[in-house]
Image (cartoon, rainbow, N blue to C red; front, side, top):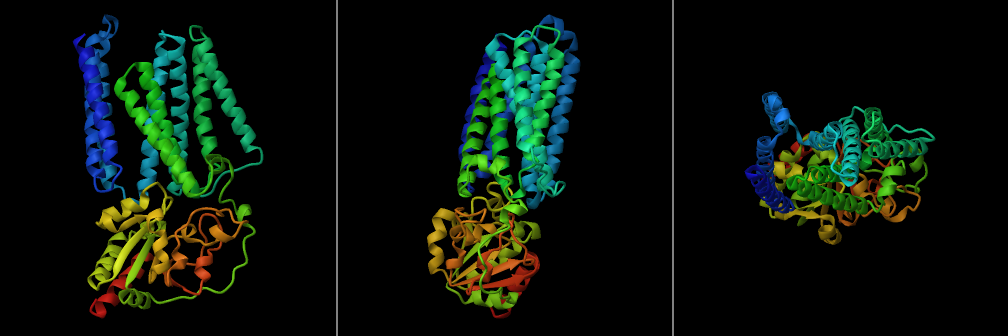
Length: 472
């Protein structure tokens, strides 16, 4: 009885820390402390779970030592590996790590459900149904997140699609749901093991099939969606186990992931169904497009740097190319030189820039860029028209004016950063390639735009040197 009281109290403490930590994560300035607070909450929840051992039935007590050893081993291996990988991972690989860790959360929820189903003796049909639902969602999140990780890591270069894919996926999902219903209906029969194996196989396979056709451009939305799935699965399994900490943590993560998914979809002016089923980024989708007028003009890095050195205001738009080049430190060095020369420098962040939600914010935070010069799209878009120079580094579709004018474009209607409205635009880019959408970027052909070709690290190094050479 004492253990139950401690478990209840620890659940309340852990839930409070989760919510408070999430609140602090809403601001870049307090995000780090928020993660620490939420981590302490998780430590409390895990530690308190060992108190349930005091109430174990006598029949299972002979196995207590083995179970304790296995639990301790799992904590040491999992915690040690996560610590090592977290310290080692680069910012460019952060989206892959987030996708993989999110999948592990869904897999853990599915594993808890599998153990509960194998143990038998469900308290009620409602608890059993909740357990099965958590197993379904957690399994989909596991394999879907693994495929997202493989796409982001370059192990799966292209979407995998075939003609009747939606029908096949629909039938697979329907069959898996029916198997789940069968588990509930035949729970106390010898058919349960076979139904459970087929059910988990179907759920895991559907996670793979659901994610394979989705293009890389939609990975930020997919990661958010599977984050919501994992939270929901954890919350459902928490309800089945009557564990308040799991329920609250799952609900918080699930609701946050759902809101973030909707915000990401809104930022691209697309519905979630369009993201999942439209084959966005397919070459056929962008075969047309508006006629391109003008031609690209190139500029030397030193000339662009001098132009910004003598400008009154500069807005910098970072994209995934900046992360690939690992040039964020050099960029901030350049920014400090401009600021020392009296230039007003700001950063403009598009909601879907990079490979995961907030990717560019994390990148700039790692370089030490102050939060007060980083602005979201809706807060800075009107300022471009009065800005002397817009510097675009490794971004493409999020600054493409075709989103405003070309109704045949797959990105038509997507809110973009108004970089083309600046008096002068410099675009740092490796070459003349297109973005994820496969659409020519009309910005690059504008009269006020000059291309600075090269790796962002090398280009920014030249820019820094050019400003230093003129006493910047």
